[in-house]
Length: 349
Image (cartoon, rainbow, N blue to C red; front, side, top):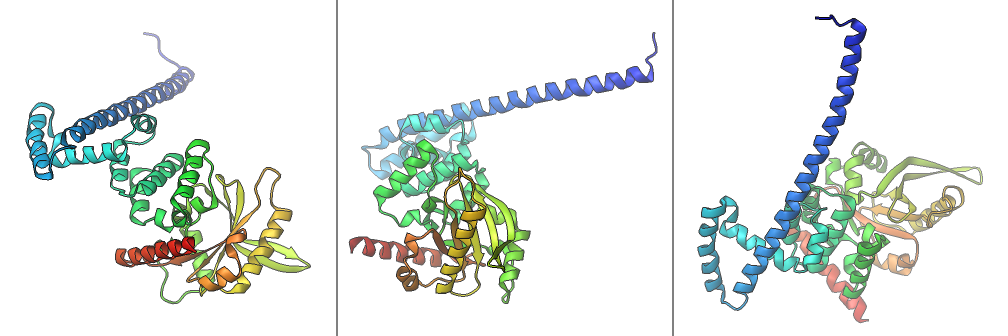
């Protein structure tokens, strides 16, 4: 048998490695396609099952309906396996009721897994569910990220959630049809920065440094479309040095986002400071295709009356609270109820 030379052996290894990478890519792509296909079929199957169950139980009382599902479950398990427990069947019915239009499910199923749909089904509010669905689809959240955002009441913390229902619906339709973000969808009224692990006493520089260290988690909290550009952005105005804490770019909004970190309560001077930074960014940093820069001032607390008098809502400036500890669900709920009550009172006026 002919002996291979060292050069031949090396050539064989190179060709084998190249061939391996090509075949491995084919196998991986095929597996991903099969997985997506299975997920699509499973989701559509569960939608059909949920539809049949819901139509059967629609005109029955609760006890009778529970008895039907309890009787149906062992029949399905005996024939098709353990995936059809009574709790699973009730979950499938809730899924159908939450996503009752088959065209929507057919569109979403190649993008979202059945596990995504389970998490979304647990969101009772239809508008909130639509918000999570669209952001999950656009920002490619995995199931854990989706669950974390729902548990942290992300929707309830957006400015969008305080608007009248019709305006919320319009903005979500723009997001769905045109992938058009608005400031009210992007920015929150409160940011949860519990992951920074700050001590009881800390400075604005400590807060900024902690955010930079935990930048990935910070971006997850403020939104995946944010891209970090600069820390302590230097601006020279009339020979004097100014520094912006953090500078981001938001792809969906197509604009620069200036962030200032403040330890105490909101002060009226912060507004003029941010306006100066925004005008500088507009003049020296903004590119031709971009929208005007927008500013976010993160405070430990904000003063509603000062904000109203300063007409903050009419400016390109957002002010939000941050919390370095995750509030109890009870406290979040109380704040949410108060915010809704205030919003309704304001709309009434």
